[in-house]
Length: 197
Image 1 (cartoon, helix red, strand yellow):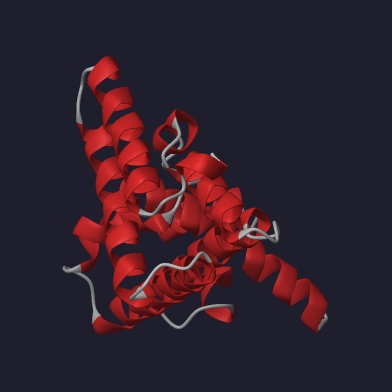
Image 2 (image 1 turned 30 degrees about the vertical axis):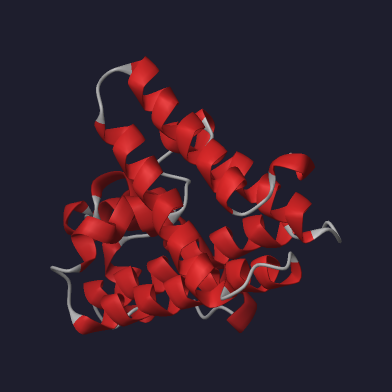
């Protein structure tokens, strides 16, 4: 049976959503194509109708993760005031909910340590996502009046990712919460966001 291009596109999106969830939860090396295809309602044999290889699937799923992250940032950036947008993003990113939902959260803390071991195609896609997210932060910081907004955005993103990574890694709930709370407070202080919080 032949399907139209819209059906194929929707099917591909389902597969990518399942792959993104698995990659966040298990890392790129822990995914199984057969399981992803089954959860998407397809057979393993249909995989090659959508992707050239497992690396192609991983790269495309990473793109899907960054599309989701961009949508979240765009929703917080809908506020005209850049300080309010930055505060909303910090609130989301450094929340216990984000920390506790690795399978739906930002791909940066979930994948940063794994990507160095992957092939160039997924790494390149990851780099594109990092650059795009950094540019969005830079734009908001620039509109907020922060000098050297590109450098500041890179620093902010690194601190956000590092705080979530550490908060996920420690075993003590109070320590984990403190990592998130302290990082949020310091980011707000350093980027003059406290009055808008």
